[in-house]
Amino acid sequence: MQFPRMFRLRQKFPRPRVEDVPGTVHLQLHKLHLERFLRPGQEVAITAGSRGIAHIDQILRAVVDHLKSLGAKPFLVPAMGSHGGGTAQGQLQVLATYGITPERMGCPIRATMETVVLCQTPEGIPVHFDRYAYEADHVVVVGRVKPHTDFVGEIESGLMKMMLIGLGKHEGAKVYHRAIQDYSFGQILRSVAHRVMQSVSILAGVAIVENPYDETALIEALLPQQFEEREKQLLRLAREWMPRLPFARADVLIVDQIGKNISGSGMDTNVVGRKLLWHQAAEDEWPKIKRIWIRSLTPQTHGNAAGIGGAEFISRRVLEQIDLRVTKINCLTGGGPVGAMLPVWFDTEREILQAALSTVGLVPPCQAKVMWIRNTLEVAEVECSEVYWEEAQRREDLEVLSEPSPLGWDEHGNLENRFGPVDEAPRLGLLPELTHKTH
Image (cartoon, rainbow, N blue to C red; front, side, top):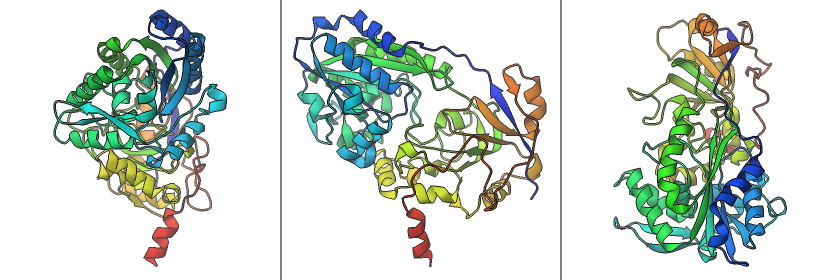
């Protein structure tokens, strides 16, 4: 098979950016005058999630320092639903990956999977809440506002969702995702979040919005009564600043790495155009990509390959990196078993590309539309097949960085990397298990 030649381009996105992250956090919190609600010596729980948010260690440390300056006793709680294998130790390991440790944060981290049921919503949904956060005098919610990978609404991922899924821990995440079978995400979000704010002292929130280059674009501190309306506005900003692929259609998208630090679905469905349906874009959804091939898991995902079922092909190394138990827990908790299903794989990546290109229609493989990215957070630079060459040269928002050249292959029949190493995650052994059963 004759493969297409590839060239690299750089996209030109808007780039709002916070230059002084800790200073901005302090300034924003200072504007809220939290001393009105705090007494010296009171304990404040601060949420720490599992997403790979830019500068999250600096942001959390600044929140800790500000609360200390007011005489409070802050501590962090992992707020990540069922991530980390649904265990307290696993969630501490996830945080350590981001440099979030007691030593670096200057405060304790209290991890438990135990929850308190605060009440029931009018729909009959029990409201779960992290026990340590419940026992604190106040809670500060820290989270990134962005479009959700599965749900559409005025409010999606952000502070409101953190009070449900994050602080609801494994048990809360399970019941809320089950409730989605009967009620809309927006109804559950508002109903549960309102009950949380009535039952627990939510002191403040720190909302983060990122730019298309995976950088901190905005940090805003909010009082709890401001969460709902301000999140709607911040979500519109987040949509405007989201990274996008440079072209609306592709036969094959090659993704070097997926993981929970990249997106809740491993790869952001808003970027690859598969938010509403599995394995294809909805009628009014873009881009439209026929086949997705995933080459690796990130080290920070700790074997959690949730969302892998959204691709058609995976490299052999992914089978060696996946922790099937952790992946199943996360996908079943989220009510999406398809996300844990294994795509087609081959021993060599040459075979994978041949198979992918043979399933995209009548287009000759050498003329196929192929895009290649490192992950869905980093799409400023993209490798593109030669069929895009003329359009790329015409567009002012694209800068061509290289001439078209053939794909390179190593002695094992695998792609020579164009975005740096992809095989950094530890080998956890699913492939030997499958091989043993096969033989």
